[in-house]
Amino acid sequence: MLEKPVVKKVAVYIIGVCLLAGMLVVLPDIWFKAHLKKNWNAAESTPTQTPAPGRRHRLCLIFALDGVPYRMIKALYAQGWFKGFYPPGRLISTFPSLTRPAFSKMLIGGKPNGYERLYYNFTTRRLEGATLVNKAFATQSEHVDYHPKLHFLGFPGYIAYVFPDKFTQAALDGFKARLRTFQGDEFIAYMGLSDAIAHVEGEAALNDFLIKISTLLDSVRHDLGIAMDVVLFSDHANNFSVNRRADLSAPLVRAGYQDVAQLRAQNDFVLPQNGFVSFAAIYTAETNAPAMAAVLSSAEGVDFSVYRWQHSVKVHGASGIARIDRRGQRFRYTPLTGDPLNLTGTVDRLRRLDGSDNQHFFHESDWWQATIDHAYPDPLRRIWEGLHDLVQHSGTLLISLKDGYAFGPRIFSQSIVHPRAGTHGALLANHAYGFLMTDFMSVRPASRPSDVAGLLARSAEAKQTGRKLPALPPN
Ligand SMILES: [Zn+2]
Image 1 (cartoon, rainbow, N blue to C red):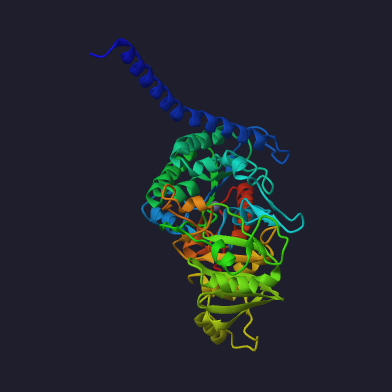
Image 2 (image 1 turned 60 degrees about the horizontal axis):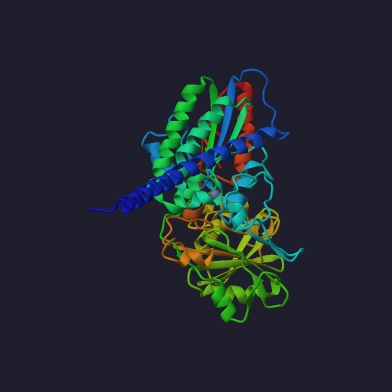
């Protein structure tokens, strides 16, 4: 028989464990709900928010689902989910296929500071952007700089990337409750949780989540009892591969360059380590770019690097070097050695179709048509934009990784966080094909992020006339 003090100790221990487990279950939920509320209040208090007086008759719901691949929505749509919608189309992301640049193009065309959380500022000579500690629990301000009206749902900071399922129900309930009490006529919602589920839990979990979204939209439509126009889209895909960490720093250091936090010497480079994505930006002296791209071309996991060179852009991959030139809206691809973007066949086809003496400069709309189904969709314009015009602090070299590789902090090579379930960022189609669908007009088979802004203007028109809009002409 056990001694009484021992029984007491065991009892206290068991009660303690139960209490702790209870707190672990309950506390994140309470914390997350409190943060959701804080976000709503912040969105409500912005001066741009002008609630319509009286009762609404029609509501436009603009709903961004982070990181959802087109093919998954297409399959669910074919199974009968997302009732009342026109068929989805592809939404080809920016390069890099990352949230900040893609999402800013879709909503108002603003430029985020960097491609991701951290970026290098050549003027202040500092690595800038929120620290991971600040971001870990930050539930707002992510996109507030370019879209203050945004309602955040299901993005409780980076903590969502550790326990995505913990926040699912609270996010869905929060969305519904918020929409029910919303008094404006345009509700712009951003659901970041879908990307966290894709990265951490993978395809089956994301599929379940999307079914919940479909059901949620049905019930919201039913409950609100008013006419509703819905624009549903995602900013990029996720590849759903086991992704190994590519070590980009080591081969450069072996070649004599120095991985630093502040550029001082000629051989210095800054390589911000952000999430675990199939893209990286290097900040260094422009004259270093060709030799660094040559080193990286044989590094494990690197597909190719791109950099500005004189008035052109160069692409350097394992299979060779090519040059991209631009004249207004026309682009030219010139393989110098090999064909790193695998575009020789496309150029031949465009040349046969065009027939004029244009020195192989083809209009961006011709490149778009010719490469929608290519492994690198719309590659020239996206690469050009990524290096020149996508973010405020452009990288010197942009690195697109092969499928199955990602770059981020060294912790991602540890077994506890590896393998991850999905990633994105690269130029590749399976990283870049987001989706776009609406319930008031059919969309093109493929759209660009900037097309979403145009569609939102048309949805405002639909709201005013109270009619469904006709389909856009094919692109
Ligand atoms: Zn995203």
